[in-house]
Image 1 (cartoon, rainbow, N blue to C red):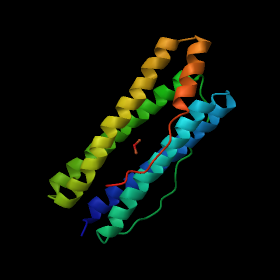
Image 2: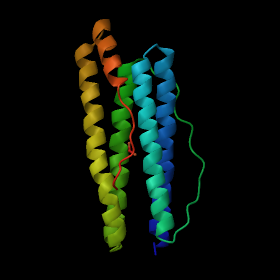
Image 3: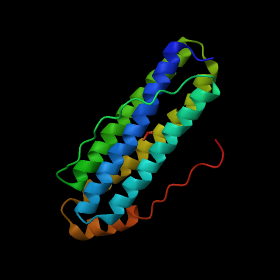
Amino acid sequence: MLSVKMQGALNAQVNAELYSAYFYLSMSSYCESVSLAGCAGWMRAQAQEELYHGMKMYDYINERGGRVIMAAIDQPPSDWDSVQNVFDDVLAHEQKVTGLINNLMNLAQDERDHATSSFLRWFIDEQVEEEASVGAVVDKLRMIGKDGNGLFVLDRELGQRVFTPPVKE
Ligand code: FEO
């Protein structure tokens, strides 16, 4: 059984993951508006991944006999100056999410909740991957700068991304 505190913290994370999906959908629409269909597709796949994260946590709370409370989701920003600016925000957001996951792990360990610690390990690893993949895009965008051809090629590359839910959890 989850403690009241742990259940509340996991519920807050469900909300944070769903907010992330909302945030990336907003970015996807911005990318569409500036004719970067590949970046828009990448953001859409990212949003699907966030929904998966949220549902994974939702299922875990229920599995442990807890209760999921669907709180209101904040409105994300809807405008950016450039696609560089968009990906800078993605990286900053993922770094913030890493902090949230680390805080959850700290709480699980403080409470000697071994099942939750074990469950959160997947998220810890996932954040390493997320920050690395977004960081690589940020670096490429810096290299490209104002080179339209470079951006065209990167947009096409990012458009290849497809979200596939992990088979084994
Ligand atoms: Fe759910 Fe991008 O972390």
